[in-house]
Image 1 (cartoon, rainbow, N blue to C red):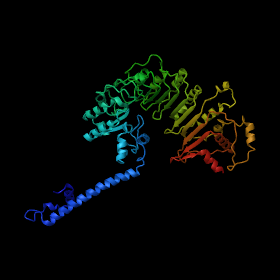
Image 2: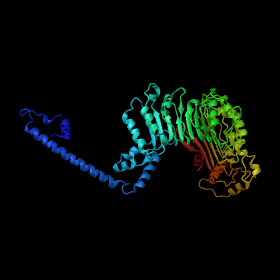
Image 3: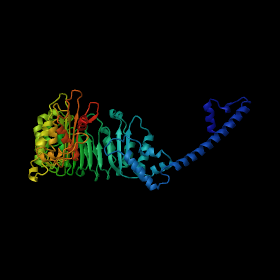
Image 4: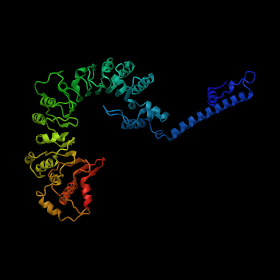
Length: 561
């Protein structure tokens, strides 16, 4: 009897002695002896392989750092490692690192595999990339095993079609995959669907409800907006919705429980309808506003949203300035704390007058204010922007970014620094006088633009924190301090803005043509050093064309040593 291992051994050499017919049609004696020897050799090799596996298992156990750790501790270690290196963030893309994948952990050794398979927490995040052209029953089986190992724990599911499927609307309906994922709807915690519109109704058709679902994201892959039906009832925990390039009327969910929403490429009438339905919204991000589609009636009176605390507006090149006015002019947001506006991809006006009206009407206690606009818009609306900041004394964190355009514009950097310096509050001012100051509660200031066409007024920058006239006695006392190694001793001063502890200005250099930003007076440099010495995180950074970042104060200090 010739074993399969022996046959494979002969086959690998291109000759099988059992086929010999020299002895009256039968194998000759040498061939029979060779066959017997090969059989014995195969048995010896099998024994060695078996012994090697046993020794390898013993080596793994001896060297396994978890071998002598209680199983409960090993489970915690696996769970922590998985969450830190693999588990994706809600609505984020698939994890870049696969190090913490449960399949990778299970491949280390038998012990680790047993631990991984018995740890449901490792299997609660599943990212499926579905390619209809290459899908096989094995893929479906792997999905089934993964979901089964989650042991009914709240799970994050991301189903993403490939770009191939995006272009093929004749793709066969993947009913088995949809049905399998739908079986686990009772344990969905986050659902992220990136697929062609025509599959949404099929996906959700057999799902009666998702009682644990908190996060829902719908991202159609179609180039044009299409109507579809997505009805998901019985979602009492749903609190976050992210939709892009869909018709609002295509979606039927429980809007009243939502606290966070991000909407992209929706008409202004749809956006106002969302705000009308979301009576408990706390955080709202509006991206790529399109024109009024006349699918919903605009509010005839102010739409008051007392719960809304965060509003982010990011228009696009398809946004019309009239639509921004309609949005601002219909709202009253008395509890708004964070407001950000980013028009990096929008060349129209900021509609600062409507914004000014919104903030005045709402009397919003805004603490975080962020504005990113082209320089041309800044020059056009600078005075109104100052008016907006003046009526918002509650601002503690301010971020201003002026974005470069094709043509170089004049800079307002020095004008803004002078305005801040002129209206800074003295540390010993009374509360009454502080109410007339510019941004009296400011704690953090971030400023970014291309290097100004005029030299930076370092004196005005220092005046924001310290005025030599006001601190004349302190300045005289500082002159008696012995010089340090830098030969520029820091000045001890009375902070005009005691709450402002983080001040950062970042300038992007255009190259050799950028003006030299050096400080001409040693007095100004001493004042800036004194500000830093007092604990203020004062940074003036220049980003070079090659990406290097230069600390301008440190650079100028080094040049004087």
